[in-house]
Image 1 (cartoon, rainbow, N blue to C red):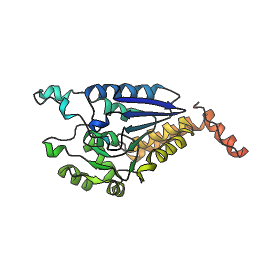
Image 2 (image 1 turned 135 degrees about the vertical axis):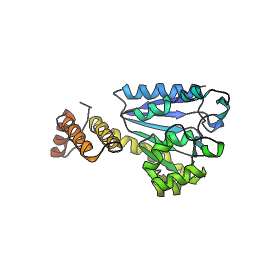
Image 3 (image 1 turned 90 degrees about the horizontal axis):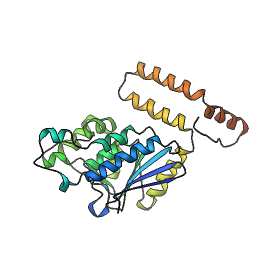
Image 4 (image 1 turned 30 degrees about the vertical axis):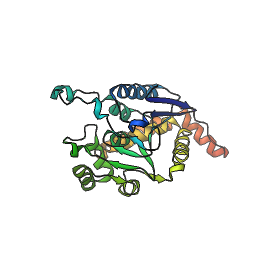
Length: 256
């Protein structure tokens, strides 16, 4: 049985952590497979949106499987451990939506943080508990969490390791929407399908432009935005969008 499932329907790809009996905790083998799938969806021109989720209703992901960690490993070995799965997902050019149902803790919180949009069920909860175990987050939480919730809230969460419910996560900006447990899948895939119906050229350009805003001054970012606009506006998808608008019909975007 694979602990990472992959599905594709129309232009939406789904990556599912499938280890519910262990709260979808990530093993080294799972990390390798997640990284491989991230590369696959990024290269597949038919994929326009990716949904990341965890099997079952107890956890999105409870982080790394502590039982697979080696407390005797050297500093150098730990430094060079398998991080590719988190980095690979963040590098995907298509929009990545995290569908969170249950616990998103430790490395699981970091998997949610590398997504572009996070939808959560009402029963979900979030934590960066590493400090309680004697170490720091190692998959990006210290860099990504403050950008979402602000300096003070990130400090509070990471210095205490305390768990927060979905409602508080939404109030701080950690998640974009909280929905009833039974509606999460439907609402998330409605969003994925809506985005997938748009021009993949424009969608990827929007993601690139917004990501640039996190690491560049406005002057640099605005020049980059204009370059991306020029590419999009002269594409056949843009011509189709204009024609569809004038003809009062739904556009059919093909990604060129």
